Length: 481
Image (cartoon, rainbow, N blue to C red):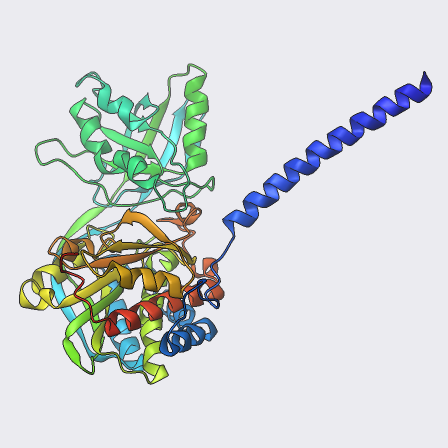
């Protein structure tokens, strides 16, 4: 009997050990899948890269240009809100950097914009359990009265719950909207989660609320709130709106879940400072045979003010300018003009993108052959998206040259490229791995230490291959298939 018990215990232990091993193996497989990186050194099976593309990819992978440019921007300038003195300083930095790496026709195309400046922002639970909270004003929000607002909270688990509530009934209350954003490699959860940031103040004001706090639009569990631009409807009263850090949103939910009535006090002092100047910084590698035809690559120069704008979007400036630097130093001469644009004031409404499309509309924009933007962090791409009407085979060749798959999804090329895409400019985009991007997005944690030099080199390789292949292709990407 004793031998049987020992045998049974041993068998049970082996089964348990096997189950634990399987769990560990499964977890490891998930980690390996998430951290899998493209092997740009190897061309796809059955595809041979041209000697020029091979040269450019190898040079890019050895370069630190994108990393160094991003380090310079985030260290020497730091935060740079659209329209601010810091963004103006960043434009001068970009002019000097573009000239330093060898771009031609370097210039600033200015435009005017309204300038919003953050002020004091504090919040605390007054009752039942007094404690401080971490909030940040959403871009464009109006201020509270100088003495702040103190009121009972009306809780809505999701933005949809608020939209489905009858108008009226929330007079004198502070609305709290929760709702968690889902992680995804391509950031697919951002759009749905962002509705409460964009429209929360308007929907709450329709129902009589005097202020709004939302769970931050992000995927982290850090005590950092995420800022971002909001919008007011013209015909609805403007009320203050702020974002709570995720742990503080959890704290509110737990307290409210106990059936407690909660009173919150919040003070915010942002202000609109009137019209000010922003601008797009532009530099070219002039084409040797078709200089009037333009292949455009870009990032946006501005950032929010909580961090130093490393992943959003210092990395995009580094990647696009770094790719141009690799091409210039290779000695190869592209047939078409390669244009690098550092867009201004993207965060506050894609103002640089709209200004560029307006200024170049017509004959000039019609000569833009292909355009894309890097604005999704610093991790490497894992697939290629096409937004061309014809010449998709060239985009597929780009993917093969980089050993990346084509996506079935279309693209407008990126946030700042959207306005020119609507005017008919063909686009493509490298989809970067962004599972953790919204852990950092629009927070104090968006800093240069999150940038990896090897990943930046892979992004540089993708952009450098793209601009060369687009320049050399005998293709009208605008035409009909």
